[in-house]
Image 1: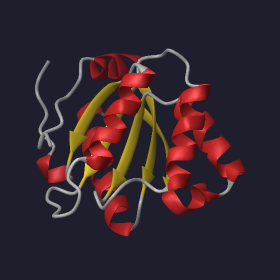
Image 2: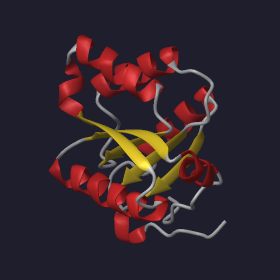
Image 3: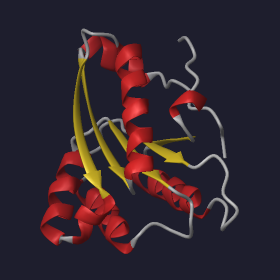
Length: 157
């Protein structure tokens, strides 16, 4: 897994547009904290003039089809979609169903899919990362991987 998330070129566009939208889906409190820390860094990097609209979903709330549909619509209107999870096995079925719905609703705007994964895991390595990379490829999205906010490194453009 790539230990660093590199600032993509599109971030300059977000800064100039003074807005960006993101959707984050996470597994539990640990992975939710990882998202929160990343979003704080992102906010600092984009500056106070950039308004960030955040939609946040806990994996288990996606068990209901109606909520999957709402989350899919929000993801399709987002510039950045973050999935924060542990790498044990694979993503839950409800998350995969939500991703399938999202890909059906997705427009062709430039989107980044960011996977925030555990930095070290002894189980099935790269199963979640591989799945999300395929999703990004299928959806024509840029795919980035990181582990924790302190491991996220920014590069100047």
